Amino acid sequence: MKKIIIALAFLALPGLSLAAGGEGYPLEKAPLDLHNKASLQKGAKLFVNYCMGCHSLEHQRYNRMARDIGLTDEQVQQNLIFTGAKIGDLMKNAMPKADAKRWFGVTPPDLTVISRSRGVDYLYTYLQTFYQDPTRPFGVNNAAFPNAGMPHVLWQLQGMQKAVYEVHKDHEGNEAKVLKGFELVQPGSMSPPEFKEAMVDLVNFLAYVGEPIQLERQKIGIWVLLFLALLTVVFYLLKKEYWKDVH
Image 1: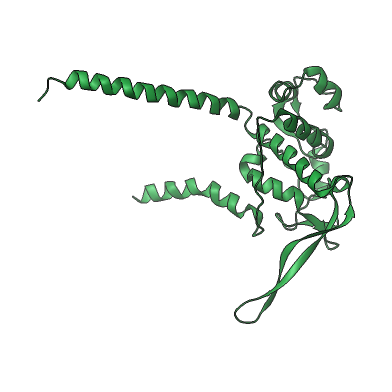
Image 2: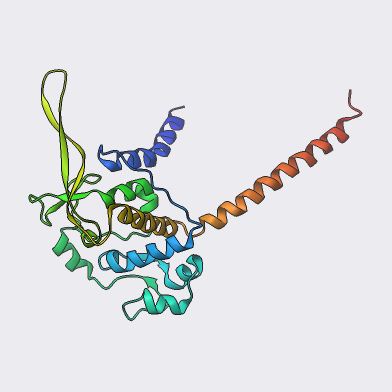
């Protein structure tokens, strides 16, 4: 029994880590659609333009991505590869890890499986909740990941926003500031609805990268379940035939 309890505890750990990912800030549901190839293509464009300078996708190849999201190799080479990489190469960046650690205090992580390790709702919330904080090295903080070491690389699109707080009192009369939301103080090139839609595309792309086979897996799973249902009927009829003379 003790071993069973320990095993169940380990199984619960991933879910607990995702739940804690927002550091108490409520996560916004990410309205993803992995069947939407236009969204995946726009997400890929956002990633290579704004994220890939620091973050790589070391387990994803350009040509695999092209095939899965509906692009040709030529389109990827012309629009999504800005280095000397070849179409069959892994999606790595050129930033030396030692320099990255010196500049940012920590090496920017590879994002191939970030959607699976942290959850898509966390990513969707994180990308939208940077706000001004002059006490931080890059002048910004993040509601989903307090004291994050990452600068707000999407500020030209979103603009800059400031945090809006409410003062709450506990039953003993102690006051505490609680983050209520954000106020846009410097507009970006996108309106708030446009930026939100862009973050849907970016997270949609990262969700695809985290498990490129998932749509095919789900399609196969439906056929497997139908086959098992048919097999159940056959086995039931066989059982009735074998046992019909047994009293």
